Length: 488
Image (cartoon, rainbow, N blue to C red; front, side, top):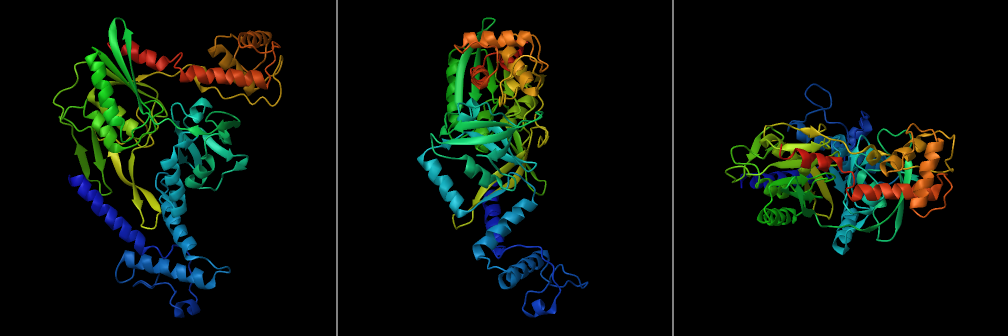
C-alpha cells in the first residue's frame, strides 16, 4: 500500500535526522575570539551574521548544535554527561513544537513501561495528555479505579501524593501516577468551572482490557442494538464485527454506537469498523501530510445499512472515536450527546535504537468532507447533556456541614442529593432545614447515623452513590435521547 511505503521512508528519514542531531541542542550566542579559535564559534553566513552555512539551513543548524554542545562540555561550571545533553536536546526540540502529543521516552522509562505492560496493565486507568501546560485527563477507562473514583474528562491533575507536578513533563507525571495493584495514590484535581481543587485517594488495580460491550434493547417494539467501545485496540475491530453480526442475526432494527469516554487508539482499528457503514462513494477518513497532500481512504461497501444508526459522544470521546463519529455524521447519521474532545492528529512511535522512543505527530486526519476537528471537536447533530449531578464536584468536608452554613460544597451536596432522589429544597449552597431533612433521609436509607449533618462519612457515601449511578447508566439522558430519536 502506498501509504505504508511512505511511512517507512519517513521513519528512516526521521531516524537519520535524529541521529545527526544527537550532539545536543542549545541556543547560546557567543562572539568571543577564544571560543572561535577552539572551533566552537558561530558559523557566519554570507551577510556576516550567524545563519546558513554553505550547505544550507540543515548544515548551519547542525553546526550550531555542535557549537553549543562543545561549549557546554568544555566550559560549563559542572560536568555534563553526553546522555544528559543528548536527551535534553531531544526534549528541547519536542517542546519547541508545542505539541502535547509529541513526546520522548528515554530507555529506562521505556523499559519500565514495557515491563509493566508485559506483567499486567496496572494503575488508575486514565488516558492523560498535556493540555495548556497541565496534565489533563482525556478520559478514565471504563471499570477502572479512575472511573470508580469519579474522575472525568478535562480534570487537571495539580499534585500527586501532596507534591506539585508543575514543571514535570507528561512522562514524569505518569510515572508517579502508575503503580502496583493495591497501592494508593492521592491526586489533587482541578475541575473546569470549579472554584477550588479537591483531593482523591485512589487504590491502583488491574485495568480491564475488554474494549467492546454489546446489548439489545427493545424500544417501542423495535430491537435496538447498543455497542459500546471503550478504546480502539488491536482486537477491537474483530470484536466489534462479531458483536455486530450477532445483533443482526437476532433481528436488530437499529444500532447505537457508544464512544463516550473513549480516548481513541489504533487508526487501523477504527478504519476496519467504519468499513461496515460508510459506502465507497466517499472516503471515511483523509490523511494529510506536512505538505498538505491528502490521501483519502475508502471502504469496499457499496451501500449503507438498511437500519438507522446513531453515535453517542461526549467530551471524553477523542481521536479515533472522533474519526468514527464525524465519518458517520457526514455520511448522514445522527450523533447524540455533547461535543467531543478535539484531537485531529496521528502519532507514530519511532524507536531510536538504544531503547528510547519518540512518539511524533506525523499526520493530520480530516473528515470525509475535509474538515479538521483539531481543538474544535465534533459537534453532535442532537445535543443532550447528562443530569446536573453527573457534573457535580466532590465535597471537601474538612468540617461538618450543617444548617445555616453556606458554601460551594453545600451547593454540590444539594445537587447530588437531588440527583439521588432526596430533595434538598434548594441548590444554591445554603444549608436549609429542607436540606437537613434530605440528609437525614439519605442517612436513614443508607444505614448511617441519622444526624442531618453532612460529615465526612455521609458526604463520601453520597459521592459513592453518585459514581455508582453514573457507572450503572442510571438517568442516562444521552442514551435515552438516542433511543428516542433513532427511528424518527
